[in-house]
Length: 96
Image (cartoon, rainbow, N blue to C red; front, side, top):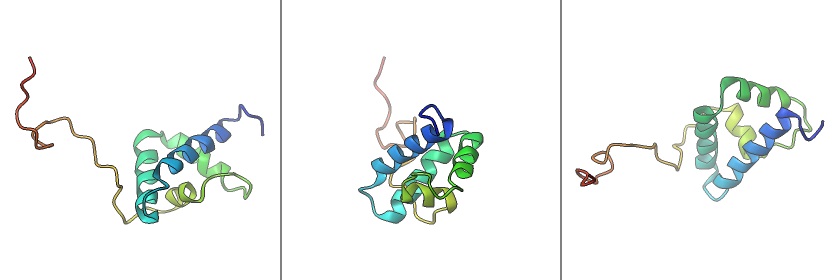
């Protein structure tokens, strides 16, 4: 495959996500990777990566591969983003 292959780029991106979560316990890492890929990747991107990884010589990090294959039971170590200061326990904003 050439360096410009979109599937190889997806592998590189997924491996970068896996590297970020590597320091967490395995179940949380898998959950974090899964959550990130589902939240920020299009279904087409996910399908391309799964199809590409059907070949045994894909280079995908084992944590990322697991995150693609299962729906994790653990919670992601990264909390959901919130925009309301009250939800973060910050009280009312004094901006402006």
